[in-house]
Every structure is written in C-alpha cells, then in structure tokens.
Amino acid sequence: MDKLEIKGKWNEIKGKVKQAYADLTDDDLKHEDGQDEELLGKLQQKTGKAREDLVKWINSL
Image (spheres, rainbow, N blue to C red):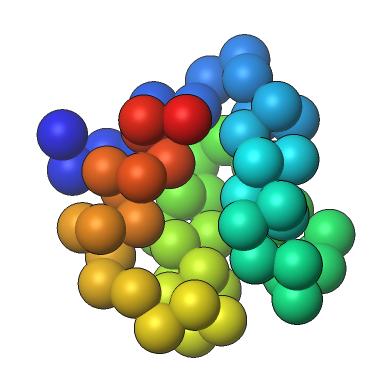
C-alpha cells in the first residue's frame, strides 16, 4: 500500500487533513491525477512525517 488511494474522495480527505494540520493551505493540498508524488512531497515538508506514514494515514481516512 505505497500508493495513494484517493480517487473520487479527495475533497473529503482534504477536509480531514486540514483538520489535523491547520497550517496547510489549499495550495498545499491541491491534487490532480498523476501528481501524487508532488502532493506527498509538499505534505512531507509541512508535516515532517515520512512518506510511508503519510500514505498509510491518508489511505485510512
């Protein structure tokens, strides 16, 4: 489970991520198909969490 599984529910997930990390902006959470790595990179910079931890957490939302 090293890939993001967010198709069709990104708006819901984005809201939960913003609740957990209020300092993230809409630009930080901008997601387009095929740009998972860019999103994960931004989240890693802002949260300080490892990529694998972020993937597991986002997929569990």
